[in-house]
Length: 591
Image (cartoon, rainbow, N blue to C red):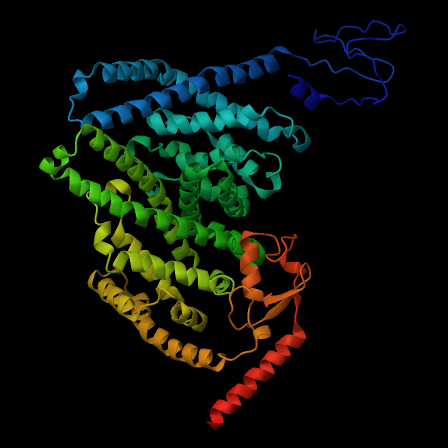
């Protein structure tokens, strides 16, 4: 209420006046009642106390917002917990071959779930709460920036959490409810300009979930049909097109906002960040296909340092996810084979079976969390690199080696000799789609095939294997994973890498006896562009230190704060290295 009063107050306050707001001076004369019957404005010597025309409306507004927080939001959290317990109990009972309907504890929880649904998801109640959420959003849109910072955070948090809850558990009820202002406030608060206004990373992640669960068109979403929000909610009624494409503010700011959010959700926790990033990747893929958002993506690519941090995060994420999935899938397969042998499974004893079953469930849950993000990250790498400018950034020395190693590592796991260990039962239940994953990999390889830097780093990679790559080309051709120019490019890749490998071997032989001062102190490789670190006085290859600073903003030799713009070129050493190489080439030509 006080915030609403301040918004409307046109008065100024003397900082040296210590009088209470409700006090008046002895010389103050009673003020006449306003013509409309509202309370008079009381004044002091240096201050005018604002008296709103109608205090009832702001009081009711904030009391309603608070009641929503204490009732519906609290109940929704309780209901989500009940559903999770029901599902977990049902899984355990099925593992023991127990009839669900005859289990007293399970039926009690099921009754509790249905009873909560009857009141919490009552359609008239849900519709009214959604309308109030849109009212809250409209109010916040009108608040000036200075006052927006002091508004109760739960106003935004509750709107986001409740709308996502309804979308996931009772999406059909949302049909016909206008949520345009909710979309606009979400886009506004996610923009880089307002990143300091909403500093709670968990809340910012919820705002991203609102865009994915409510405003991403059903035709492009992977959500199950029961959670599909009616198009009347996600589409602008004046144009019959999605708000994501028609809103002018979203066209300018949403793409960079999502890239910023992709990094911020790192702070939400290991498991939560996976679902958040999977949602962000889906949104980015949808925006990428829209001509309205291409100028925003072009502007992102022009900010080299910012985009490299994002690209580095994608590569780090993919490496971590692949390692997790490729470790857990063989374990899941082994347990499935054990369970498919009734006699051997019975001989293990109940305690041992429960121990294996519990670990098996943990592995399944971890894979189900990791694989959706892994799939979407590979797709994101694929569509981003169709743009020549963005592709050139991935070809930089600080990025290309890591990208190549990641791609070849995944390829080794999918097509290599141990690929059969990944063949689990019902792979779709884990979101494991090896054919689709291989197609995305082949598409990425094809987009980089003609670039000499990519060929060279493939040749240098410890994961490179000609037999493996040729096998991949045959598999790709047999399964018709690529077509047209993309297939032609991918088929030509092994031969091009072999040519690059010959050049790399010749170059390595040339540099075998290079002086120690020409070698990178971290990687022991011949430096291409030596630079001086002013914080420690160490000379190192530019690509090595740049790659390091993408993950850690400190000098690796003394842990002092270091940034890319502080690095100084080692010009004199670079000239000596160039002369040494020229002399070695002349010697080889004479031989």
